[in-house]
Amino acid sequence: MKNVLITGGAGYVGHVLTPRLLARGFKVTVYDMLYFGCRLPNDPNLTVIEGDIRDTAKLAKALEGQDAVLHLACISNDASFELDENLSKTINFDCFESIVVAAKNAGVKRFVYASSSSVYGVSDSPNVTEEHPLLPLTLYNKFKGMCEPVLWKHKADNFTCVTIRPATVCGYSPRTRLDLSVNILTNHAVNKGKITVFGGTQMRPNLHVEDMVDAYELMLDAPHEKIHGEVFNIGYENHSIAAIAEMVKKVVEQEMPELGTIEIVTTPSNDNRSYHVNSDKVFRVLGFRPKRTIEDAIHDMVRAFKNKLLPASFDDDWYYNVRTMKKLGAK
Image (cartoon, rainbow, N blue to C red):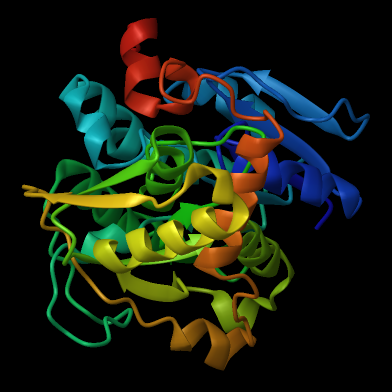
């Protein structure tokens, strides 16, 4: 597989994934609305198409000659539903089957769908495996889960289909998001000297952005018979938000002693999403185990702040999905 199309390839993960695939010699086509611009490398094997995944005709043309599709594009995270509900529904669910059919008709051999571990909603189970019932708390979770059986309708021996349910991603990217838990807490610690924790007892799985990219590479490389029709949780460390705040405090005080003691303030939250994801299956079937920790991601973020790679981190809408899309009047 040498020709790969990534929907949403100019996003947070895409800005790490695309250069990695180019470095391996893939020919990469990024199909993205470019709400956040593009900081991808100027590479002869890269084609960037500014396009809406709801424009099936335009996407179908881009799919010609592709061997694999990594479908990352979506209105991402729960807070994005502050936006027009119809925008999120049309992008995250309504057009999904058309994309799958267009890929299959174009002769694409492999379709990797990025669902989300948030489809589990709230669970007291000590280990939420892929067989756990989906209990979505928000429309984002609901639509992510609803796409999964749609994909299975079209799987075939010559059209490998696989779904992954990633944990919340953290760490530095050329298009860093500062609206995700680990990155939010690190931004507050470094730039405000204080961490505000909303709730704190909620359990969340997290994954370093570089490990997320490792998982996508694996889905391109893995044999058909090991991944076809399968769902894989892709997570690593499950911690409470309060425990993550303590990690951030420790790393920032260690890396930036000039800031003194970082205070942690806890306030109530109405966000009760909590689940402990078990990712043993992807290790058992494919030998995949993340190599980087949450603390590694915090160190990466602190270094990026120190090296002035993330200026105006509270004021610039660019780091925040909802704020940017509101400003652009996304429809």
